[in-house]
Image 1 (cartoon, rainbow, N blue to C red):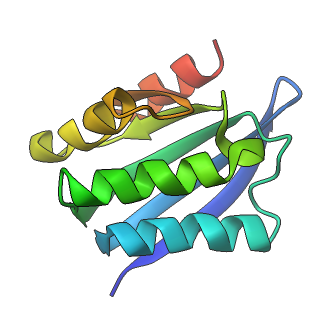
Image 2: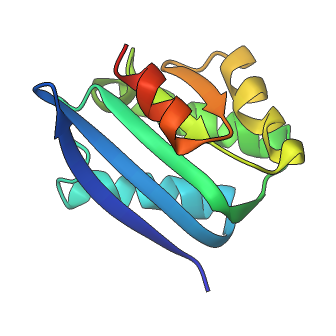
Image 3: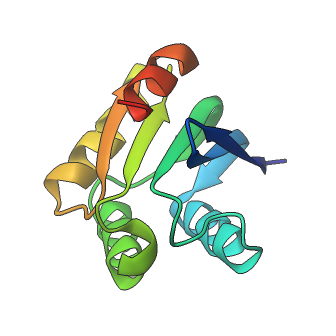
Length: 126
């Protein structure tokens, strides 16, 4: 079973969403997790930064069709995603290619992949 934990933290007067993924996820489930966060008010238009922790998750993503779906979704919600800064925490080397390809595919937010939560937190606050 998969699940996503959401936590909003405030650091130096900045609102940061921390999304922690557990289990196996498809592209559709990742998109639904964003829709849910927006609908529940957990990810707001004034939230400029997020930490996406995939250390306890495994992604089932097609590097062509699913990347196009993710790009289309993020582009369809520019008030939530345009120019936002996301630290992506991943430990599975084969999954690190996903955010890299997403970025090269015309992603509208700024992202960087990290292997540790501390490194991602440090970068997100810069």
